[in-house]
Length: 423
Ligand SMILES: CC(C)(COP(=O)(O)OP(=O)(O)OC[C@H]1O[C@@H](n2cnc3c(N)ncnc32)[C@H](O)[C@@H]1OP(=O)(O)O)[C@@H](O)C(=O)NCCC(=O)NCCS
Image (cartoon, rainbow, N blue to C red; front, side, top):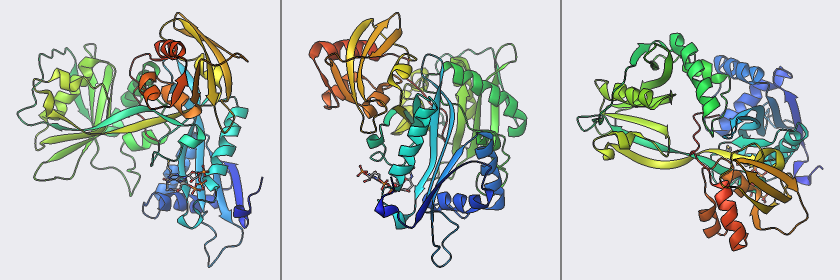
């Protein structure tokens, strides 16, 4: 339905690679929206590779009548594509949403609402059970049924003399490689990590460009990126860290971790020892440390790891309740009637959830609800990274005492999810 506030605007939706004449302005608009610099031919070319390779759908809103030449750059951008999310019971299709911007001249007229409503309806039509995104502000996406589900820590690790690992025996080794040489090993390690890590999101194509050092997503090749690969005792890659020098602050020489992915605790700790052994650096910063990071527990002095802040790493939206809930792990056997309230309708209804041996059968029902929650809360619970009880104390879940106890025993399952992918 056309809103009066949208008069004079045209909403367009097309596959990446089509309507290429519109894309230069589209890239410029999203760059503006995130306060980045003007886009170069090289940047647009790399972004185009990503959008086309990932089969993205491009949405945008253009002025019907350009004012003083302000016509090529749309007043809103929105991108989505389908990849997989590890729900703890294998990989499930998920709609990934990104590059959402609305021009300051067209804020709060419902442009985002219309773009995301149309896209989620399309995901439902394509039988995609979940949608995921990352956010710039926490108050925007709850109303569309998204809840924060995976978290991460920004850490600063003092790699001076205080950095001392307790007994750490590793029969593997670490090799320092050029990022482009390391890329095949990096890609393979990530693929295996994605298959085994609850909360992991499959990586878009731009990770290759970024981690191979081909382009820094600003001006050119990334000349400062370094990659160390960990090899197991048989010489097979089972972890890597990509890092760059950071700005020195207060006389502290800093290394910034770009990406750190490992398949074993030994690889993880050995790569930390490698980082700590780097000369001409005093501090290693990483903004994607797991919230249940083993590193402090492996150090003689756990305070060497300073958690600077906790942030959300992934927001989840359940679109198809039976499909999504029957494709995640469950704790105790039990049954509840769950009522999901969802203003967009996709997850709305009452569902009988019966769990046994870690699996669930989920069917619509007319029975009275034992537990009532909103769609965004269901999203937050989906990966086991948020427990029922604090949500209950916050007034976000209601129901009978017995129903809530049973639901918590069913839904609160480990391991703590972790997402290594930004998008
Ligand atoms: C966030 C942004 C996309 C919102 O676009 P918009 O077209 O103004 O949003 P809408 O008018 O469709 O608003 C939809 C709803 O979200 C709310 N909303 C929008 N932006 C919000 C914000 N920053 N904080 C709180 N609520 C917000 C609106 O009040 C509205 O609520 P309602 O429909 O329930 O009444 C836009 O402000 C923007 O481009 N910001 C900078 C880039 C950015 O942050 N992108 C998001 C990256 S994930």
